[in-house]
Image 1: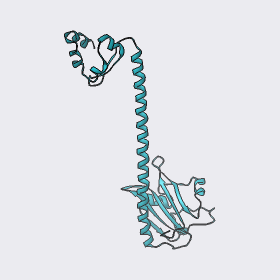
Image 2: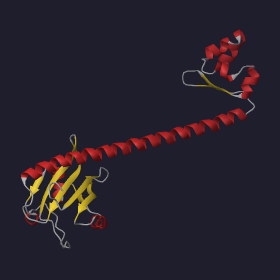
Image 3: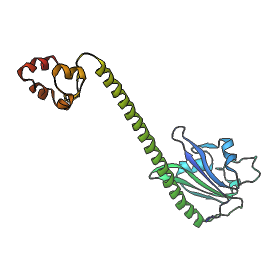
Image 4: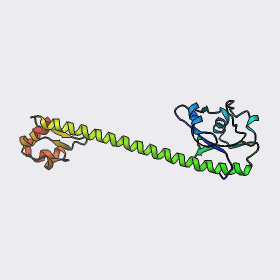
Length: 217
């Protein structure tokens, strides 16, 4: 690639457990290797944890002599040089981008600057993807709530239509929102004629005789 890295890795901060987890990678180490190990770090632990905690990018010439690097003794092929940069969204750090090479002192300050820029682009892309996911989940949740409310309203209406008693329903503003068939027959009026009217308007349809009904209601 443009910086000569042999391995690139993205680790993201999980807000639920506060841990850094491996999320993506490409290079001479297989992704499955990390997944099988459930590769994760605490904030402040290892190179990735240090970058997230300090919110600073870093260039390391030799990982073998850097105390921040968590060595894997079983690795047959080891990283030797690295650049790590935080993934920042505004003032928030969401993870870290790490690039590696098996040669000592492979990266230089110019490559460090380029990786900082790449990390910014990666962070924006991840944030946009997370935002889209959040919006989609919220839309689905609201859609389910609406469907449930509509189903409940349909069941309630079916029950009210089935009863022999006249039923008139008003909303929080005292406007008529429902009149069942029995009430239509008793009052001799169609529901659509009084729908969304106030109780005062409703009483006016029947003159003085309706005052008693209004008080009772």
